[in-house]
Amino acid sequence: MAAPPSAPVRRATFYLRRPTPGPQSSWGMEEKAAAGCREPPGPLRVAPVPCFGISLQQDDLLPGALRLIQELRPHWKPEQVQTKRFTDGITNKLVACYVEEDMRDCVLVRVYGERTELLVDRENEVRNFQLLRAHGCAPKLYCTFQNGLCYEYMQGMALGPEHIREPRLFSLSADVPETEVLERELAWLKEHLSQLNSPVVFCHNDLLCKNIIYDSTKGHVRFIDYEYAGYNYQAFDIGNHFNEFAGVNEVDYCQYPARETQLQWLRYYLQAQKGMAVTSREVERLYVQVNKFALASHFFWALWALIQNQFSTIDFDFLRYAVIRFNQYFKVKPLVSALEMPK
Image (cartoon, rainbow, N blue to C red; front, side):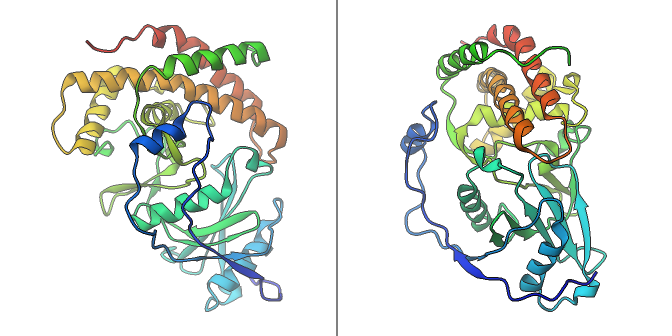
C-alpha cells in the first residue's frame, strides 16, 4: 500500500519528568502513595520520545498512520507496508503496520477515542509507558502525536475469558440509576472501602482479557495499554481483573471466578509478591478486600460507559454496558457487604 507524498512531519521531543504531587482522587490515594511508596533515588534515565505534530482522522486512520511510518521506518518501502485493524478495543482505535508476514517488526498506531481526555490523563499515560518500559514491563514507545501514540507490537496471544481461568497462567433490564442514587452509593463506597486498609500500589487498572498477552514460546504474560495505569488500591486492581472474567462484548457474570479459584489465584499472587509462603489468613483477608473493591470497579466502569455513550465514535453499545455494570453492582452488593475480615 503506497503512502501519498507529504512534507516531513513536524516533531518535538517528550521527556519523562517526575510528576508533581497533587490531589487527584477524593479517596486520598495520592496521600497514601506518598507515605507508603518510594521512588528509587536519582533521576529517571529514560530515552526521549519523538512527538509529531499531526492529528489522525478518526474515520480514516491509514493516511496519517502511513505518514508516521515514513518517519519511524524510513527504510520501509511504502508500497510494501501492510496494515491490520484491531477492533477489540472500546476506548481507542488501533492499526498495525508491518512489511514482514511474521510481524516481527510491527508498529502499532493507536488513535485516542473522541473526548477520552475527559477520562484519561494522556501525559500521565506516556510517563507510565516510559517508566514501565524502563523496568522491562512494557513494549517500546516509538513516538507520540497529537491524538495518539505508536509503540511496539508484542508477540503472543491476547487472552479471552476462557483463557484467564486456567491456573497455569496465574504464575439488561433496568434503567440507569438516578443521580441521587449514584451520589449515595459513591458516598457509601468511600466510607466502606476506606476502612479495608488495602495498600496503595502502582496498578494497571484495566486488566481486561485483551490487555494480557501470553507468549507460549517464552512461557510468560505481559500487560499492554497503560492509559488508566497509576497508583490505586491493590484490591481494586485485582477485583477489577476478576470482574473482567465476564468479558466485554458478551458479558456473562457466571464466569466471575468462584471462591476456590480466587483463593488459588490470590495465594499465587501473594507468594510472588512476598517471595515466601503465606498463611491462609493472609489469603482470606485479600479475598475479602478484593471482592469489596470489585464493587468500585463496577461503579467506575458504569460511569465511564455513560461518558463514552455521549462522546465515543466507536461502534459499541455503551449505554447497555453501563446498565449491565450497574445491575451487577446492585446484585452483588448485599453478598459482598456481608463478607467479614478474618479474625
